[in-house]
Figure 1 (cartoon, helix red, strand yellow):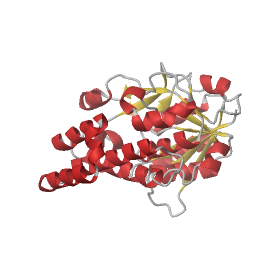
Figure 2: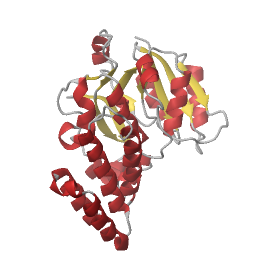
Figure 3: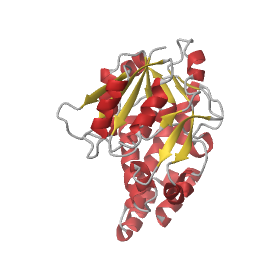
Figure 4: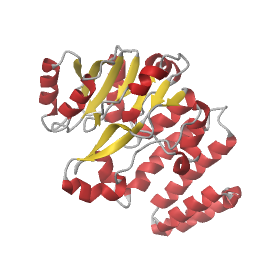
Length: 313
């Protein structure tokens, strides 16, 4: 196997060395591609030191040397990669020794286009643990049991609570399949671009479970995490998830082979977060309009959950 590990780097001077070193120790890792995204800290200097120290490490920046975000940075890394497989790693996360154990066996089968595994949580400080333990606890981010590839997309979309989910840090993809079937790759969203990417990826590619009962990588949690700051805020999650479901619906509504049931569910999710994000004075008008224009939703348990969320948010 020749795996290219893509690491977007922004404000990660304290963590990126650990991420790189956790990747290059694996024989399967052919190269580690750092895409430095105009960090205001000393990340660029640290990345340059890593390239001079390790032959496997390659450094790139966007042509205009400006900040473009995690999604476009991953796209640039994929474009520059030369391996047969793509794996991802955030600059403040790290791999564990078992990271590619399942992949070595599963990718022998040419029908396997992607493999996903579980990730754990590492708190970089007691303060970070105090702030974010309620959000992440010590649990695995994982799909709860082994599923056929055909069940992954509907499971992620329709049954997230009972199906579970996986992270980019635990995902390895056959590059040729991804390039051929997925266009665009990552969209330039400020948040949840990885979730939107995983929705589409799981629809187009045959994804198989690897190690899902123990961590193969660790999510690093610290006070300045981009995602933890948003997810721990009481109002911003509704805004970012509205964008996520808007993008998902724009894609899904034009896919002829996605079932009407799933399209309806995506539309409901979109509407529920729009309502949750609305000012209080406007919220009830949106709820009434929702009930009038989508009467069938009243019968749905999923709708009722989303409806209650909209009222209390």
